Image (tube, rainbow, N blue to C red; front, side):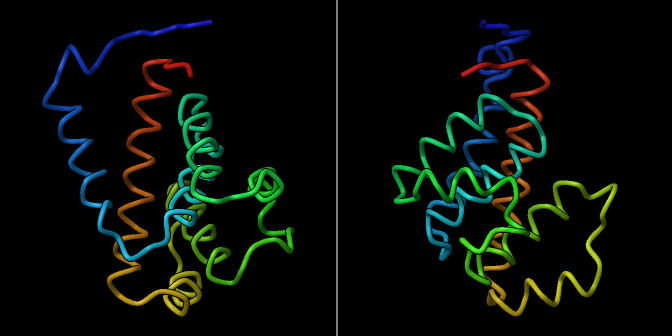
Length: 145
């Protein structure tokens, strides 16, 4: 089933170009590619973006992730398969993706900041913000893999 409400690439090329600019800003990130893919997968799960789940599941496998860990992302809080650093990134992802419900409390910030230096924390936040923006295009325009 391919339901495409609007081809925003064609309708507003400058919008797509701006989104690609956000991706380019992540290209030189200090964050390991597998961590970025876990974050993108988790946010896409929370947002229900079929296109992004398909894309980032595949990209995560290419970045060295295992199918077992990818299947556990939805229950990361209860899974022993993730490092403290990965758990912190997924915690930050959950809070910033569900911002209206969860906010970004000081205790959560401190837990995340303990695992990432200042530059990495800014890059992680950009990664989360960017995938959330992509998810809004994917879900809003009913894009399918």
